[in-house]
Length: 67
Length: 280
Image (cartoon, rainbow over all chains, first blue to last red; front, side):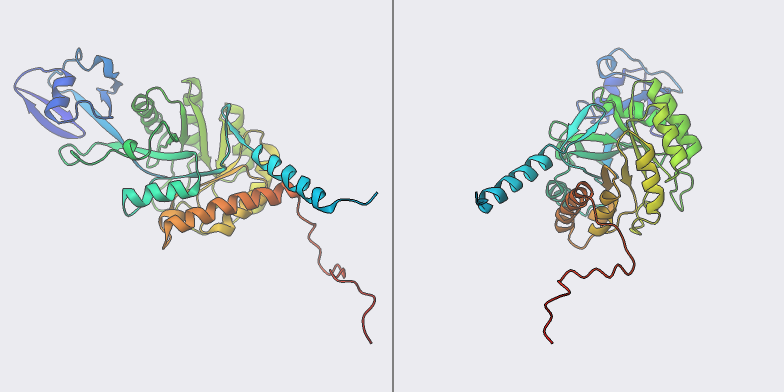
């Protein structure tokens, strides 16, 4: 078991998975998001290669209404 | 030879229309025919927002960047489906950021989200009660962002020296407040806006504080190059009608500025009607 922090919330994973697999599980695959992995932006093209480890922090953002 | 007044009038009108059609605002090398920039926040529904933005005629539309509500947003349309990046120039903002670091981080995420889009609205706030800009952090963030290749439109106070410094750093537009964000108090210090317009060479866009159409017209009459607003439209009783009013106010104010207003005179003793030929 590993624990990661996604948008400030802890999530348990059975094993290390890729960013892409996580996004699929969160029903966010293919959606317009931007993602930071431990403070570093991960380009969409690297979602498949980037693996998550215990203690990793993810920020997933979208566009919302604002002035 | 007698003047054909009808022809003369036609040529004047055509000339004016030609002048106005060419009166575009140039921001970071791109020209826009609308000088009204609008936000996408605080609307009652996506449909109302879409209709109001359409009615405003705006070409540049601000958006915010926020954490995705995981598990709560599936099925909801994304803002980017409603406000298409192919139709509008999106201007991601840093609203809610209180440090240069947060603002820079937010805009890097925005650039990733919008496929490398580099035109951004920088705003670093000082405190949550007034939302007054923190110019120290704004200047620091602007330096970093310009070095990172962003085209920065900077929300700031109406201090002309700060405005000049932001231009020197390389910001592509200076966006002083008219009054506090969301206050609708209008233009509280027209003299400072005038000083900024006189001093700065990049576009000056009044951002924040506009409450109704006359405020937008006054900003334009002062020589500001554009106006950015959100709450004045979204919080109106009829946002779509207000959006249209704002479009016309910005145009009217711009035309009045170009036309050049008459000087202000106290007791000019110059009536508009002839002073002779009065019946007695």
